[in-house]
Image (tube, rainbow, N blue to C red; front, side, top):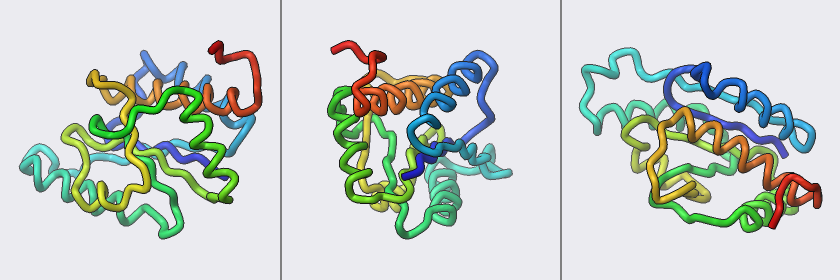
Length: 157
């Protein structure tokens, strides 16, 4: 199985880059992993919120493969605990999922088409975080889940 972390927006800001790189490297001890930072459409500032989400959705849909397992990070999603997330990842591995895409949408979320395409919708918290921090939290939580599945010391329950 391979993990792909997709985020709409700018490259990692320096204040989170080191942490993202650290956890991404740690995850790579378990699964291949890569980041795909999806640039905002060139005319984003002149688009309405609806049109921007639609345009971003078209870009995302064009990048997704039919067999990709899409996990959408969305504030209205399920809020599993760390061991639940570990079990979820292990289930996908047991099902021979080839590619898990974790998607952080744009500033206004994602289009309805992307929401409908998602296999699972995950909320990190009822709190709202800046996209840059969501990237760091995502990487750390996936690493934590992998370490739980290997019964390693990182997670203390």
